[in-house]
Amino acid sequence: MSNSIISHEGIVHSATNNRLEISIISESACSSCKSKKICSISEIKEKIIYIENTDNSFKIGEHVNVYIEERMGAYAVFFAYGFPFLLMVLVLFIGYYNKLSEPIMGLSVILLLTIYYVSLYLLRNQIGKKVTFKVGKLSDSES
Image 1 (tube, one colour):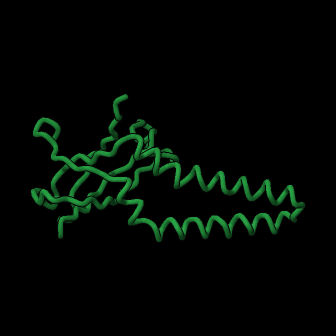
Image 2: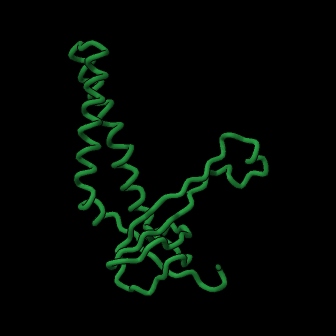
Image 3: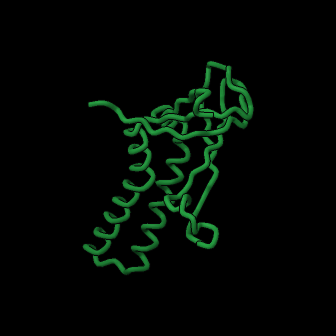
């Protein structure tokens, strides 16, 4: 089974110490709609990605492609949204089974999710080794 690749175009903001800082414009599905100027739903956000780079051939302001394997994206989404959802549901079921009050269950969920996301933040370097981005130059026909 072949690995699918997710690709986004970005702009190099800085290139120091074998590390690139790349800006990617994330657009919602309706951002290409002709009515987006009068619609309050359309959304465009700039995201910054840090990528280790040993090539050192990238220049500030250069347009590049950023790649990630689709399964790595799914891995990241699971740990950002899927696993916390499962934890939350588990705490609610345990609280319901033990006849805890709703405020206690709500506070328990908030406390557990806070601990989870703080742990995720503290382990970001280890997770960053697993979820890796790759960068490549745009060909002249794509610029």
